[in-house]
Length: 591
Image (cartoon, rainbow, N blue to C red):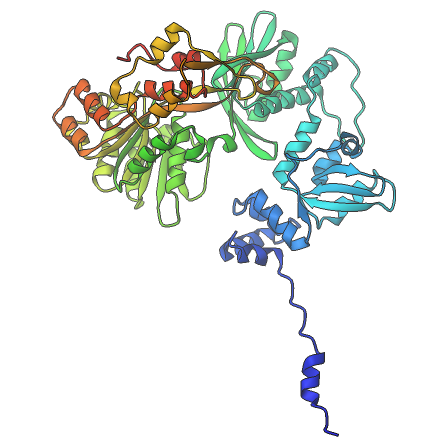
């Protein structure tokens, strides 16, 4: 008998060793979510602490919550869950105290007596699983589903929301005995909870600022939502000293000083996001007036596509951004979204091979790949001095918060003339008004020609609530006003489609009001814009000091859509109401 081939036999019987599973960092690196430098920085941050690597990457801004959740699911072999699209059993969720769920970052979804379906941010946190088990029968099976930490935080806050919460706190302040703390909850003073409830509710409603205004016998609480102030409630004046003291302590102000203007700031984590609050106090004859501005990064650092521009406007903006040098201006009154638009432009241009530097007063939102500097006039760092300093930093793109004086205007133009791209804001009514405004600041028309790339004028109008808006035929007066536009605007891209959206009779939509929009009829805002791209033909007219009428005629020939025409399109598309457009855009100057 031939001898068996022992070598081949061993090859067949010996299976290759199991491939070692990738660690989380290696998996993220392999998928291109992070770089090796990010891992090294996170590992350095991790030294001496117990914070998981994934959470450090999210905290440092290298990774999004959603990407971490997806990677954890793949790493642990579990499924992900979208908490916004599933039904959570309220009875199951209530079995775990809110403080415990918040600390462990879990959401009980459902329980059938033997299996608990649990949304978790960290499936490897064994201690948290043991803590959750205390509130269910022994020997249960836990089915973990991976959710992002932000989604879990938002659901927890929604569960904790109580429409009468502020009323209950006020009753407690009036002398009603405080409710006993739930297991795991720490009792807090009613004033502390009242302030937290006011701030949290304002952030949830999308408010941009909070106004606390003392009157003779009460304190008025108003919040600004979608650019309009709304009164929320009136508090008894006896609560005002404690309330103002609490806010002053949070903002690091002098609680004993009630006769001076004071400014401060503080941070809170709401809905899984760090919210920045800027507080200002103004002494009045009835007491200290407090205004708190809410800076929510999630609402400000948006892509251009999310700001309400249609395809035609986006193409115009892209053509302006494609120029390698020149000044780009965004004009409009305070609160018209100028800075948000410029941030979106910078975000579009930001990359590792571009050096972007900014001068702002103050720096409201911070984002990566951009070197941001705050103006400090008291230390001799103004806009003009700042531009001189930035030019020594070899920038490619410069953002100047506002052109407000002749020195800043000249330095901005000088930077554009030396091959830089400069972005800034200017206070004037429309895009054509920017040119005489720059003349007033000492810039000659010949200097501007060839160095100004584009001017964008905008207003913000409230969008009609999609769930309750009421569509009706336009009245004769509305139809006449909506048809008052020039032939050039009617031929502009998108206008014919908007007019063709109604067959026969022209229709408009009105605000009605429902629970979804807080009974206002409006939900969110959109931009109404006028984009003036400076072409060679317009440059010739600018350099020869042509009057405004000639500039507008040439712009219309080139397809520039006026702000009023852009707004009328949004009315015809039922995105906003005629009254809302008329409130924000001057329709009386239309031809």
